[in-house]
Image (tube, rainbow, N blue to C red; front, side):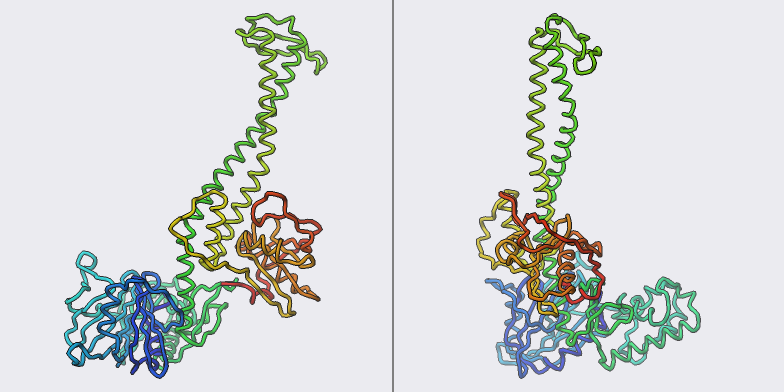
Length: 578
């Protein structure tokens, strides 16, 4: 977890000078796990606390969230005790992920009342708790914990509050033990577990950084460390401790090779090659968790759509395979016509009650052929029966041959929508997908949801030469972008033979790099995204057409060229969206 005890201290060090002495003007609770405090201290600040399982954190915030019409009970209680109060102190409990805000306020009797608002950042056990400072009793908490949920500590009104006991080393103490001292007395342990097993506030991310900088393999057992490795371990460890105590932080966002945000931390971690420096820890934290939270909400809402589309895709695929198999099986229908023709010519040789007959095949050098007969039918009825079967299969073939291209087109279209869902970055884009699925008849409209959603817009990029590139985010955008917005001389790009975004390149004196960047975006926002490379077709927009009655965003084009795009090319680094 990146939001470990060390990162918690960094946040406390950042917000304390800004908030201590500040007055609490507003308290809000946007959802059941989140509290925001509006604080004035020469200027306005918004403090956010979240106890959500995977999003627990505390930091300053600049984003606005809608509050429920009826406030939560915990929010009402905090308003009663905290509004008008002054923050007198902010501190971290030891090196743990626990932050305490001491607040002084006047009660109903105009007497000075001291409270502590505590946030515990502990995964699924995260909580926000209001405690009376003098009695150390819980006034209330955003989550009530009883003995059935925890045998260690109960959290609900009137219970005594105490911090969770932890015997690990606290690096903020003066007499903490060095790694070399612990290694002498403790049982052998895998080094990847060493720091967060014996030191408070250390997570795997900083543990791996210390080991990496010490030249120690994380899978190595402590028993096998050399004297030099242990010396290096102490040296690197003390360097980290010094930076923490001196508040010498260097916040970074950790990226993957495609510039997607993976993680963050308060120190520059040398073990990562792809990273970006950030000035403020709160800004870093807010952006990371906002994007993660948004992605979670999108994923939750998209789950049903993906399920509907996947089921539809499976049915369409099975139907396509079944009809293809039927078409192959129907190839034998020509034998039925052959039998009918031969029987018709030789009808005078057939007698009712015959089960089979051998006749000369006029289509095969008069060689004898054996034909099965229905003994209950007359000669004429046997002939008509073979013709009838032949006509039935021929009609079925004609229907299948007409239906297969339509099914294939619908399969491609459903794949296109599924691909679009994977690249959605805003909730309003998901609403457009919902409208599209409803229009296809795959699901019914939710009558309760009558709220109008602002239409999303395509991605827009400007290259160093001044060219503009537009990238459709969904089929509706693809349709409008290519067929309505683009000029006839704009350049159209699309990943070759796979679902993907429509990309339009516009500008005068276009450079080779402009074409490459547009090609990259067409490949990156397609089925090729996870392949690391793409084949991309491009042509002038005037060569792009739409067939009558085809689905949204489905076009065909000619007079095109194809380029190969390697996503690792550094030219594309500034055009990758997280």
